Image 1 (cartoon, rainbow, N blue to C red):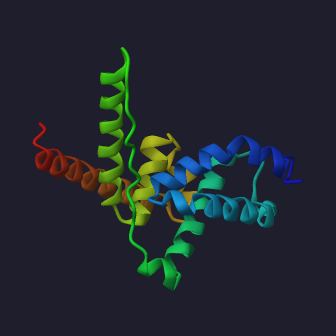
Image 2 (image 1 turned 120 degrees about the vertical axis):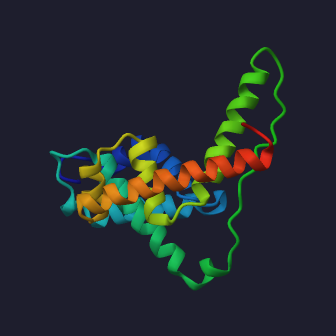
Image 3 (image 1 turned 135 degrees about the vertical axis):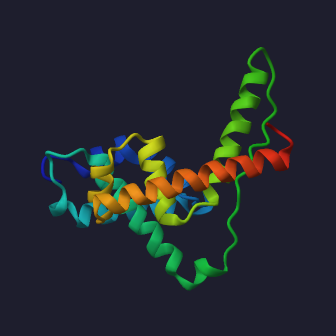
Length: 173
């Protein structure tokens, strides 16, 4: 038991959320399953550090961030090329234009996110996309709140610049 949380229940309810976060951190589809597994194994081992009065997601995302950082430091990860997943899906029907537009927006966001440093990317994703307060991000990542805000500020600037570069390259406004 995890201080009032069952690890099996946690896994069952939070696995899609962890997968999504790992993907947004730039993990390849081929490594998502292994990294997600590592996140929950680590959560089980570190269950004594979980404060049940706090939300579980920031705690899990802090673990996920460290799992990804550790994986990136391995020599094999240094040699591997980041793959951008393709979404070559044929859309038909009334919603085809909207789904294509959504796919294009997702691809733009994913490409812009890949340009961010890992620490800034994690803070940006947690704050802007997941809606986690900066104080909880700081606690989850083990950094001062001021550092979290600094990473968020720089991450926003870099993300905005990357979106502009990508749109210019694509001939968009």
